Amino acid sequence: MRDLKIVREDTLHETIASYIKAGDHIIADIDEMKTLICDMIKGGHMFAMDRDRLRDAIEDFVYLCQPDDELNKDRLMKSLEYDDEETDEEYEDDYSPRPPATSAKASLPETRHSQCKDICKAQTPCCSGGACHKIEDAVEAVEKVVSDVTDAVHETKEAVADVEEAVADVVAPVKDENEVAAE
Image 1: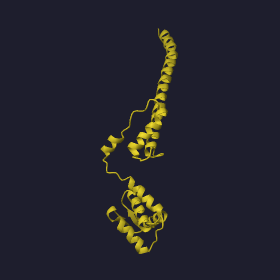
Image 2: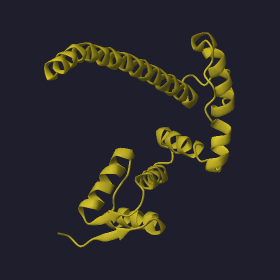
Image 3: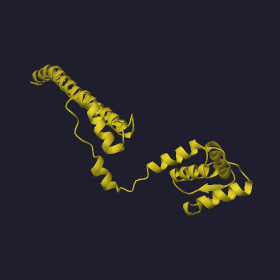
Image 4: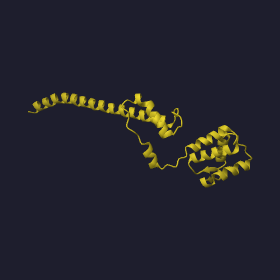
């Protein structure tokens, strides 16, 4: 086994930069950067951090190495859009689940439009399938599952009651016969 070189968050960028320089590596795209990270791990580097943090560093280096590539710039810009300084409590207050609409299908476009403005903060009338739509779809799917489970529980309770009644109908005559025989 190779000697391990632990890479922590505070030395992440310097360690990767040193590895790139020492090996005279050329990074043209994100796949080459991922391969470089795999080579580093193969060589004994262990990244002691959340993988999201490592992915952020990969995106940083790809852009640093190829700043004129629009794809690299777009990827970096998109990752920066998600940085949000809201606390968890502020997020929960702003985006807590709302009661289901009386007619979900009838009110869905209006509901989604208001969510786009509130959640996605889109500048257009609709964000065309952004996060708010995925949240809405997930909430609807969960509500459907809860409804199906509630129906199944109700049907099961009815079936259990039917079985108990059938057992009572069978047991009662046998019990009566045993009491007569015991006398």
